[in-house]
Structures are given as C-alpha cells and as structure tokens.
Length: 299
Image (tube, rainbow, N blue to C red; front, side, top):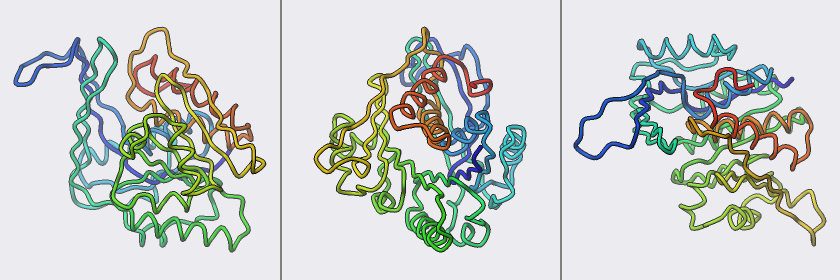
C-alpha cells in the first residue's frame, strides 16, 4: 500500500456525551466521557493506517503531558512521528459536547501552540519518499503555500507520480492560494456555505475556474458526496460524480466523519479505483464511522 504523510493538527479531544444539548448557564451531568486523539490530519491518518497504508504525521507537538499522550497514541496506531516539531506551549484541546438525542456535536477548541513553519517541512521531509502528501489547511497559509510549491518542484524534478491533496475545511484568509497547488482538493460544506454556495454542485462548478486540473471533492452530509474532474472529460461533457450517503441504522458519533471520508477517498485513489467508486467507498466508510464510537476497529 501507499506511504502517506499527513501534515496538520493533532489534538486531545475530551468528549462528553449528554442526553440533550445543555441550556446556557446551566449545570449538567454527562452520561459518559472519553479522551481521544483528534485533529483532522491525525484522524485521517488513524483511518488510513487501519487500511494498511504506511502513515506518518507531521505537526507541532507540545512539551507537556498531553503532548506525550498524543505521541504515544500515534505510535500505538503505527503512525510515525519522527518528523514532528516539538516546542513549548500547550497541547491543542477540543472540548466536544455530543448530543445523544441527534448525534450533533458542538466543539470548543483551545490552542496555544505555534503552527508549523515551512522551514521545518523543507529541512525535515524527504518529499520523494512518499506516494501521497495530504495537507490540512490552517491559519499558516503562507507557510503551507511554500510547502506545496516545494513539493511540486521536487516532484517535477523527479518526474514523480506523487499526489498532493489539500483539505479546506474553514475559510482561513488567503486559503484559496492553496487550491491551485493541489491535485485533490477536499472542500467542506461549511466552507462552501461561507463562500455563498447552498449545494456542492454549485461550488464544484465554480471551482473549475480555481484549478481545473485538480480533482475537487465536496461531501454534503446526508446528501452524500460529489466530485468534479473536468480535466478528465471531453470539453463538452464534464459530469459531476455523486455518491449517496450511507447512513447507519443508528447515528452514534459524527465526530471525525469528514476526516474519515477524506481518508476513504485517498485510500480508494491509491488503490486505483475510479472516481465514482472512490466516492462510494469514502461515503460507506464515513457512514460506518457515524454508527460507532471513535475510530478504533473501523476497518
């Protein structure tokens, strides 16, 4: 299987399950609480490692107890951490309220840790050793832009078939600069709505002007997921591929469903599946994730 590097965030998730969402200024008892590895890039690698890919994580880890906990957990999952940048600060923490009545999750995130610098990536990573590079777009857009340019230059020099993907979940200032540098772009529903689109098709059609040579993917919850690959088709016929959602009998935990979808799509592409098959595979995996607590034993 593929050797994959995920660049982004790893957090400690503290998840409280409650019978219904609390009212403001109220005191409530949680039905259960668990602590888990979180963060978009780390979650996707958690899934990809279960799919037998050789995964490594690159991000910033804090010199604190939670930072060592995250590093140990990544090691348990067979995800390499030797490229990580360690520094003083506090481990990013997500406090998640999981509403058992409808499986909605409300997240309060705290971060007091610098973002990854491009210099560390350029000095530390042997780009040629990975078949797939996956980047989580964050506030460090300028640094990410430098990393992506570096990857593309290295790939061109080696005439490599390496793939580069970027996940755009939030509308960070200037994040559109990253779109034209990726081979695969994962747009979130939240990002689409922020840009004024009320459906995935509208976003994907407009994104043909942003990077027509990339696969552009957008998952839309219960409406499934969509992919546009206009460069692969005749000029007059450029369909948008679609897969329905695969909802479980009971929705238990939607935390990380989007990260699971991204991992499923990357896995399918690494195995040479077509675009429609890749969407179906990713949606099935995301649906299965929603029907269980956490990521362990997903595959």
